[in-house]
Image 1 (cartoon, rainbow, N blue to C red):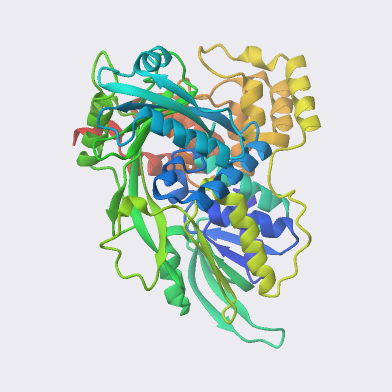
Image 2 (cartoon, rainbow, N blue to C red; image 1 turned 180 degrees about the horizontal axis):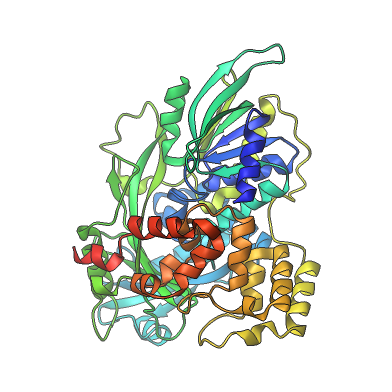
Length: 551
């Protein structure tokens, strides 16, 4: 963890233009945008990067087709533009995908009307995807035999996009971008307190920080603060006396990861209306399917999947798929539960009479000139580039000079760099190292995950062919990738790697993880002499999903 310690040392007693608190998608993209435009930036999170709300998404990059129900046309237009922009900037990480929606007799819309909406959605999205299609029930069955079409009137297919890897990995790409632009970045660093003070050089924040891993406390200073604490922004603002026009309310959403459900194609999302007439999906994730999500009002940002959640989703999907054996809790490989931080007016009461599902994911950004604070309310992965740009604009208003935005703080490396990597990988016959069925070529995977750093992986495999072997037989992760994670990705706990730098915890059954020999080697590569303690912490703090479901 030398990289992390180096960054903490830079923060200790340092002075920065901006301290970004919270390293979910909002904080990570803000740090990347600001550092990429010449600001001195410190980025902290009391947990891991992308470890709270940002790790519980549906992994979708979409314009918000469902928001058309509430006539939020400007929001849909903006999100579709953001989706198109991300697809162009991240062609290997974000792919267009079809949403096949089967509409039964209980659905709120007939197929022809839904098709009109899909056509409008395509037009609002500036024709950035393939056009929509209208199907009758027979065509739906031909498209996906797993769908039970006995009560289906017909359906549509519209297009959006999705993250091939997991959401936290995408968040980490912005963290890496911030690091490469000179930002001081550290996970597991908690903001203990922050005080605005006056100095002969101008007002600044003096922040007391604590290294959660070691317990050490230290101070740093910053001219401005970006409050990117997601569902906790209101708590921080109150502690600073920062009164805002907006606040956050919480909606709980869960996903269940199960064995693959589709029978013909696994590169498409299935969409259905549940019994409450809310859309839910079957989303591909590697060789698995992800069922979700729900929408439940709660009063706390801390959530977990409960028996009612599992029963509801399993009942809904069993009623709509033609499965040989209905899904049960025993089929659940992994569970995801998080909150959507939804934005409401501070003077809007407790929202008791609000149609909860009508609240959109539109973000708001506020600036307090006296305190030197910028707060990000709400938001989603799709809109992340806009958030970064808007935060940079507000920081400039607070007197921090920034360079012109050349838009080089985001996106994948140049096509010429990609072509050279693929040339070298082909010459060394990299893809022949894979023998497992139904897995993507190594060349594609390494380039997508690591970009320019993938060249180092090729060199590692050339020097030692064992580096090209999978460490865990049930997961798709090379030994060389683990060494890269240990050196460059600030892995502090085993969960950081298993859940966020990779998606092993999401697609491999707990029994296969815990009972296989690979987990110990993973810990040894990542943590060296501290492997035994980190492994014990991981096992103790991660109950097996099957045991939770059964209990």
